[in-house]
Figure 1 (cartoon, rainbow, N blue to C red):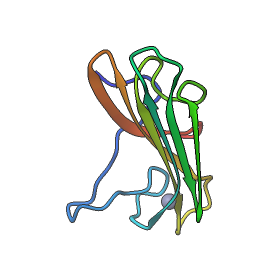
Figure 2 (figure 1 turned 120 degrees about the horizontal axis):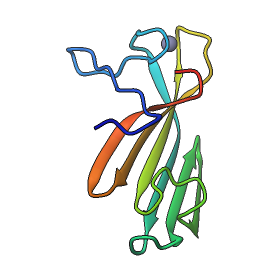
Figure 3 (figure 1 turned 30 degrees about the vertical axis):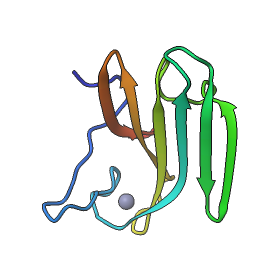
Length: 107
Ligand SMILES: [Zn+2]
């Protein structure tokens, strides 16, 4: 079962992640967004964002969380080769399963 809206990852045989736009392997990690709920369906918990040298922490585990009821994570990447917009790698739990894939309007 593939979660609606997520494009499968492609990983080079040597273990590195390939760009979902151009297929080349020069992605650079950017912003990281982590959501950890206190309990299932709880809107509160820990929300951590790292963006360059800055880190912000708040208790809103609902707004922007890729999981409707549980925990989730978003990692943004920029590609060195293509001029597409940054892409977001999403990891989130849904009904006991853990999903991972790219989410972006153009992929
Ligand atoms: Zn690319």
